[in-house]
Every structure is written in structure tokens, then in C-alpha cells.
Length: 297
Image 1 (cartoon, helix red, strand yellow):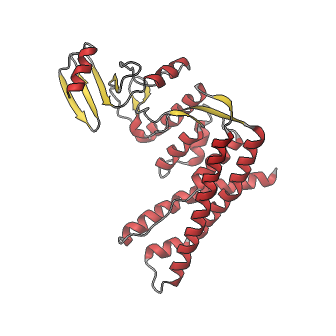
Image 2: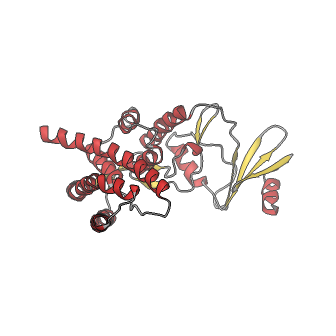
Image 3: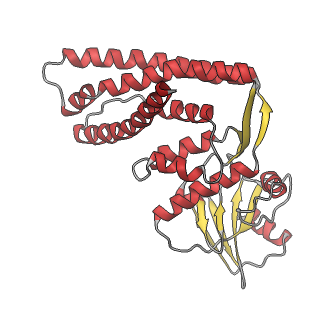
């Protein structure tokens, strides 16, 4: 609190009211409001975005090198989540397009990504083989165990896809040695999109320069139940076209199954496994379509 008051004095801001919500403080004055957060400074990111003509973030009032964030408070409009999700897709595409550039890749970093996916895939293949073999020995399977083994081929199919295609992706990169990079928000969520007089992205603490596909992976994984994957790609490409190799890496990242573990709550296990199977099924449809389109070429 003392640090906050000191910061407000340094900016000649006279607070009428202070309210803490989670890790941030809302500072109200007679004619405006601000958001204050400790150990957070996106000043350099905001300055870079301005040079690229991207301005969809709150005005920043702190300076370079400070260890806090002080931004304008955005009064938000009440709009449906479906519309916010659509806005988030388009805004991420605009962000990536305006900050996009080609760069010669650091093959050590690409090799690290490649080897990490290989290790994870090998581990998951063994994990699900062992789990499947164990469940087969159970005399009376639980509903959750039966649900998993009944759909285990879906896991194997996607793992097989990843195992093959990660090599194709890696070999393509080794040959071309060029990738497209941009500023990625790296924390896209409905909570981090504010809609007022314009659309604003907040919480830039995790932003970095990287492949745009990482933003799309998180966006879909967090919203897959409400978001059609083909719609996501179609709407995003209205702002920025995705190359075939970028799309392949996107599918690879989505197709790596998580490790499913059983708990003592069979009902909850069934609910979570069924929900996850819905997710994997949607990925499998896109994988199949891609494989069919490449067979025709």
C-alpha cells in the first residue's frame, strides 16, 4: 500500500478510492481510473507495439525500468462471450500481422523443440500402452477405465501422427532455415480482452517474440468446447494467412495428448475423460482432413 501511494504521488494522481481485486489495485480519481500492479512492467512491449502501429492496449503511465504497471482503467461493455472470442481471434491475427517478420532460425532452439516433442511422444506411447495393458487385466473395469480403453485408438492415432509429422516439420525447417516470428501475447483468454471504445488486450507480462502458432494453440485449447477449430483458422486467416508448415506445427501441438490419471472419484473421471475425448476427436477430424488432402496432391 505504501508503494502504491508513493507511485501515485510521483504521477500527481490524487486517489479518491482504492480497491484491490486479486493482484491488482483499482485507483479511482475524480475524473478517471487506473489499474496498478506490482512486479509487472510492460513498458518496453508497449513501446515496441507502438512502432508497429498496434495500439490495442491500455495507456501506460509508468516508465522504463520501473517494477510496477500503471495503466488506464478500461470501462468494459457487456457483450456475449461468443463475440469476445471472435474479437480475440481477430485481434491476435492483427497483432501477429503487424509485428510479423522472417528470421533465420536458431537450429539449436528448433532442435530442442523437436527433441522435446519426440521425448514426450515416446513417453506417452509407452504410458498409454502400459495403462491399456493394466486395464485389460482388471476383472471389473470402472466406467472411467472402460471409457478410456474404448477410445484408446484415438490416442494412438494422434500420437502416431505426431511421431511422423514432427520429423517432416523438422526436416522442412532444416532445409528452409527461415521461420516467421511475431510478438505473441502468450496469455490469450477472454479475461484478458476488454471491450470499451475499442478492443484492448491486457496482461502482457508473458509476451515474447516467437512463432504466432503458440497463441493459437492456447486460444483453442482453452476454448475448444465453444470454438470450432476450422472457424478459428478461417477467421484468423482473414487477418493473417497461415503457411502449410505453420498449420502442421499447430496440429502437432494440439494432437499431443495429455497424461490421463484416474482418481477415486469415478464420476469426475468419466466427466473429464469424456470431455477430453471430445477435444481429441475434434483434432483427429482436422488431422484426417489434412492427410486426405495431401494424398490427393
